[in-house]
Length: 233
Length: 228
Image 1 (cartoon, one colour):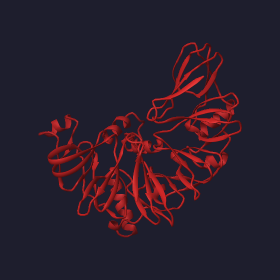
Image 2 (spheres, helix red, strand yellow):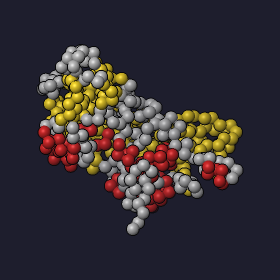
Image 3 (cartoon, helix red, strand yellow):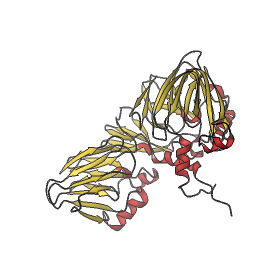
Image 4 (cartoon, chains in turn orange, brown):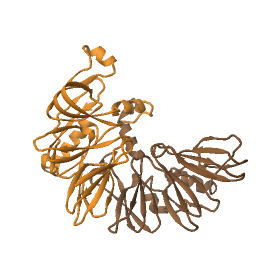
């Protein structure tokens, strides 16, 4: 199984080529097209998620916390090769990170797109809810071996960290678990943190690789959202 | 008439330079970016009031179209589609058909070119908004746009499936069937709802972004109406 990312960076499309009977698991809603021999199972079994009802509950919990539909579909090429293509909702790039054995990649919830079965996506909630903005942050953990496809709003920058950096919560895409994170105020006081427009940020410490996106979805959503007519509920 | 597709693929625009007086190009309303002031622009309802109203209601396509006519050689005209993304031209021989999702139509050249909005009919209607197809029959050139990149696929022997919201158009020689997709999908605002299965020999054109997903992303950011 391999991912090819086309039309980078603005309007990326990821084509996932599958060998006969290979499977890829992807966030529901990301599928653009596929060959007819692909068998699709909706809200499919994630080994880390347990049985049917439990999976549904976990999906709903993630939606409530992450503000998005985090259900995964599985796509299996039946008996012959096939492909599935995926695209994100917003303008921007996609990137593939190769998870190595023994490594853990923490992915910001809405940045995850797809991965093969050889990569376990642990969907345990380990995020927090922003105090000021109401924005939420949660991470998925990817372990095992194989490629993970992620999307970004805008361009993706890869930063190799050895030390400490602060990253805006709206700009983080993913980082390897050699990096420890804590959620901190952007500046010393609560008021100045709020006024700086940064609110809460991630302090990342350690050694590893991180990916950041050049635009912030919450900023964009807030800018456009307040121009739209109010919704009923 | 010379045409050039500029600023592709991210922000495609059509640049027309007229060679002779009387040359014409027709576009959907609102597509004009800039033009020489002496170019004659006429607004009309294509196919009369009823056909235009139907297109607006079913296809989300604009009610009006504009015809630009050169009044002297060398005049320039720029046209662009609404969404950011690619812009392409399709040259059609006499009698050759091309099927376009109605929102993807930008402009056409050729007095004999036929845009059949009745095509798709009930099938297109039940396919949901965005799968109201128009049948374009040559001779002539039609210009069409994509939200995002334009991805072309030759339908393989086993067939090909496309999310409705990502479908831009397809060539003749294909049959299609719309069906629901994804079990939990109906529960939520976003996610694929309907897909189109293609069979036969031909080419399918896809766009790599779709307006529905953007709307779904923005939905939670709208303010909530005060109660009472």
